[in-house]
Length: 271
Image (cartoon, rainbow, N blue to C red; front, side):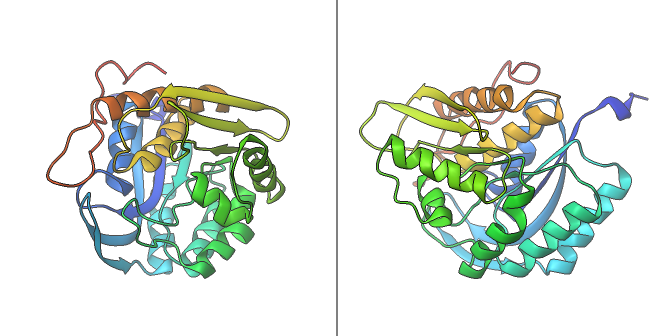
């Protein structure tokens, strides 16, 4: 019998993607690739592929909370992340569960829209996230449009990006990483981490035109590295490297967006 108490565990609270390219499925693959055992609580059943979302069926908030309670009763996870949550009631239920079961401060991926343009978080859900979930966050990881939606700040340069990061900290998050993958005019993709005191930039050469599930995978990788005991800057740096390599090795299943190669050789034991 292995010494399971020493095995790090990360919990993902997110929607289900039947392609496996995003959502809970991508998170679990990321955890496995990075040497972490994965728990999951599903918030939405989403009928989609890498091109489009066809239908969304929300999971009842009480059922979401019960999933979290069940796995936390088995063993408290070492880290957790949230993804697509759906509505305000789900957000409130998740925030209550995090506090009630003394779970780790979450990596909050504020998934508002799918990569194909379908809304995955209601307007009321955005307000609930600002009020209940962001104040609990170890780090929040929005892309540019998500940062603009949450803060009301139009990001058109370095100064406004830093202002948006400051606003996310003012909302209560311990730290914020604003992802620069959608930013135009540069050959590099630059993510900016702000911890309330210092800014750190993480640069990588831009690869292709984007892939399905990059945001899910990035936040899952941060959570996995935190579960393994890294500090936040190390975790973000490791996640940036992991996702960049996964994009470089991405592939297509049909006519849609590329799918990340989560099982990147040599990444299971290294940051």
